[in-house]
Structure formats: C-alpha cells, structure tokens
Length: 282
Image 1: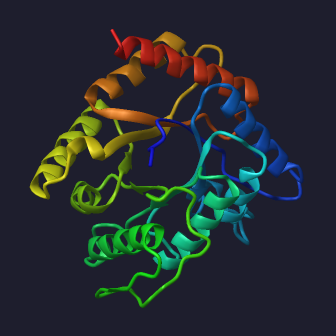
Image 2 (image 1 turned 135 degrees about the vertical axis):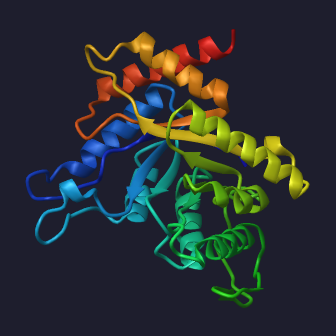
C-alpha cells in the first residue's frame, strides 16, 4: 500500500441550484490534478465552517458518493475523504464503502478517519477500535472484533480491495494524543499548522512507533493547509514555506487552494510542488 504524497483538497462540494454543474467543475479539477502531477484528490467530510452556514443548512454531495463518481472520471490519482472531526459512520460501513470505491477505481482508494475533541473522554478509544476494525475488514476475509464501542462478528467485506494490503489507512487530527493509535494501526496522519507543529508531530510519532516496536518509516506525516497560487502570492516564498514543512518532517502535502480554485491554479500548484521537491533534494 502506498500513502499519497502530493494531494489536492477539492473545494467544498456544494450543490445549490446556482451551481448545477458543480460536479463537472470538481471532476475537471481532479483531471487537472492528474495532469499537474498530483497523486491524490481529497474531498471534505464534515459541516461547513460557521461563516458559510445558512438557514436550512448547506447543500453538499455525500463525500463517498462523490468519490465513487470521481473514480470513473479519473485514471491515476488516489481518492480520499478528508475528515473534519470524528467519524460519523460506523467503521464497518466506512470500510465497506471505501472498498467499493477502491474496486471502482482499480485500487486507488484511501481510507481516512477523524477523531473527536479532547473533551470527549472516549474519543481515542473509539479511534483505536475504528482503526482496528477498518484494517481487519480491508485485509481479512471475515474478521471478528469485540471492543468497548464497536463489534463485528464474522463480517464479510466483498468484493475485496484490489491490493491484498488494502487501501492506505490515514487519520486526520492535530491532537498529539491521537498519535499513539496512529503509530499502532495507521499508515499516515494528516496535520495542520506551521513547521514547528509538524516537527512536534513527527518526533512524537517516531517515539510512539518505537514504543510499539513499529518501523517509524512505516507511518508518515502529511501536512494539510491553504496555499495561494494566484498573482501576488509569491511562488518562491510558497515553495520555501513548503520546503520548511518538509524539512520539519512532512512527507507529503494536501494543498487547499481555496473555494474559487480553477484548473490553471492546480497546474501552478503542481509546479509549486516540483519546486519544493527540488529544494528538499539539495
């Protein structure tokens, strides 16, 4: 299994009547990402920020349905949902749906989970169980698991994922205490913040991997955050910023180019990642 390293976060997939061609727009951005050298596209899963919430709620695509549609409109990029908070679905359902996307996409799915806030005392225990259940359903034929929060018994997951090791298993969270279950059960963690935050996460993840006798190189840190590509944003300065994140321990990126992103912005972002790679290779 391979964790993607050059990701594009697609804009919030709104479907209001003012934008009836929203899916075609998102698909064109995914296609531009493939052409620009991105290896993955990520769609949002979670409520919109409060400043964008309107009476009656926001109208959005269900994220996994959107991934399935993008699977047939793309050929190379990995496909993932980027959680914004705790995973709302049962882990067995997430594993089943992501497996379906993986089959449709010929082995290009990524399974990503979120975690609840520190104020929820059971959030880390639930995350650990969710990771174990998802891993079991991705690699075993009919696993059984009994935990304090989730339980499966002889649960079949057919059709099977395309690759025997299953899709990469990722956690999106900035919680330092979430890194212990990540080290035990996941393949990557997606974090935000500056280079200092990335360095702290990378060092803590390495310590947790050593504590559970797992190769630290087998679990990577991905950085997710906003990047400007328009005129006046300073491409060289942006490349320096990403290079500093890479030097701090980010093995890859999930770039957010903003709501109004266009295909030519995606192309410039691909060039930005190329410049970043050149800097870190020196």
